[in-house]
Image 1 (cartoon, helix red, strand yellow):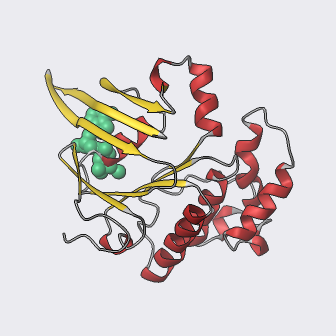
Image 2 (cartoon, rainbow, N blue to C red):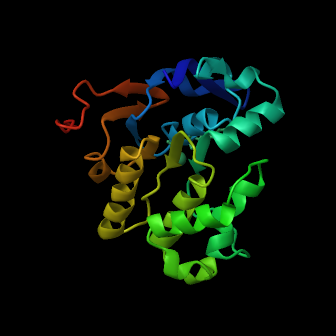
Length: 232
Ligand code: ADP
Ligand code: MG
């Protein structure tokens, strides 16, 4: 298994009372999977993704990437893995507004000690997401759908094995949602494993597995595969 999650919990305290936001989650993700997690707002989806992305320490349980528990690694090693093997697209429009589109895309390259042609890869990715003509624009000149595509290109900069996206199509119209989801499907066909969180049911036709998060608990739909759409 590429990613193996066992007994994952995240608890918070509110006025002396402890409550579980992520409650004993088990999840195995294989190379090439396209996994969608759906669920209502507040059900714990972002908390789960943040733990998987190496950004938020679990209360208990573990997350193994190729059999290595990421939270037992030293901070430096953990950042290195996060920057090189995982591509993370946070909720919202997390671009840097004082950098051009092109510089936003190539930024992750400079955060790790990588060798290669950063400019060439950034140009290739901008072409992949259909934004080449906008490379020298500033983010404030772009539409919501275009900004999401910048974030996708940026998350792919270091050639991650797993692309993790938190509600990448929220606030987008149906047409733009389709463009973004088609892009994820293409990236997946090229071999990248994908894990996305969404609360939109119209994105479920993409991908081969669908899970639902409800009050911190994660359940997989029995029929989830590409041929049969789950009944919800
Ligand atoms: P979702 O992404 O499904 O909307 P979240 O994972 O963002 O859900 O949040 C799940 C629950 O956890 C919410 O009730 C939220 O208020 C709570 N929560 C999230 N982060 C914290 C925190 N740092 N401290 C306390 N409660 C939190
Ligand atoms: Mg969320």
